[in-house]
Image 1 (cartoon, chains in turn brown, cyan):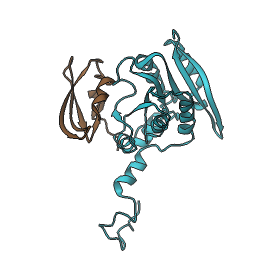
Image 2 (tube, helix red, strand yellow):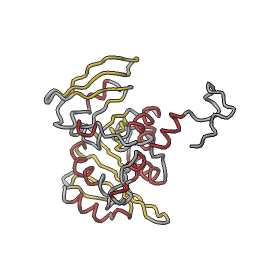
Image 3 (cartoon, one colour):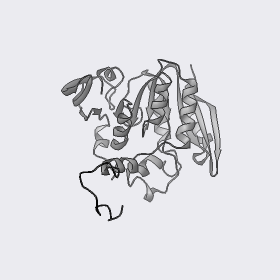
Length: 64
Length: 208
């Protein structure tokens, strides 16, 4: 994901802002890291450049 | 998949056949069909350069990519991790998310959604990602209703949501559900097929 995505995403649970922690960057693309809700503290992973903002109760749900 | 695939194949030669990973993504991600094209055409007709568009259930990223060609700033969202990877590979910025729930209030001028809508018996549902991309629950509206619950929140003033609706899912019930949530509906495109008629319905907040 690119950093400007931060302007439009929020915590899916309480809609508060997220704080970005970058672990790996490839030019402008954030490849690995986390997004942490500034209100509830829920941590959402960024893996292979894709932020996973599924609510925690849906995150483990994985057909096939 | 059959057992003949190693006969005479050089295991290092990835060119002769699709790589297994690619094959798997094709089998787990809904590929653009007539419904995708009808929705994309309606969106492209409306979109202005610079509009911010969210493509919900982006799948292969087809509708988002068409809107981007028309000058929109696009983001795709999908539940399915295979779809997220495929849309990202098509150059669409993508978020793994449930409908519009992970996006800020007022963030978009346009939202597009080609939902899973085939009415499906409960026991047949959601066994795999493709089923998930097609099945709309018993009445076909299992994904449409939660979408209509939240879509107005992410629209900027004057914004609009474009939803693909099939006659299989009772468009009048969809319209009533939306009206009860303060959304007014306008049919902007339609196309008849052997077992259904596909519609694109544009929703706006009744106050706009």
